[in-house]
Picture 1 (cartoon, rainbow, N blue to C red):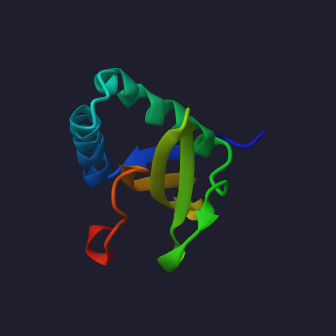
Picture 2: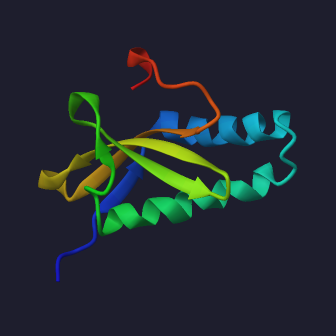
Length: 103
């Protein structure tokens, strides 16, 4: 059996998680701090299925993690030669999309 893929979060993705909690708090979601674990749980699928996200521009992939009526959009790059995934950005689906400079 193949070794699991290693998942790394870029600094911007870590910052996104912090911003995500603040964003959810401004939306009146009192459970926002507790929701930080949800994206981590969802990212675990990338350790065994790195190609699960839909292909998007510039060799990137996009994974949607659902949570009830909402969810998260994860932008990542699969690096098969390194057996790794690099998560570039994480956004709540109610937030605006990504700009070219953000990726």
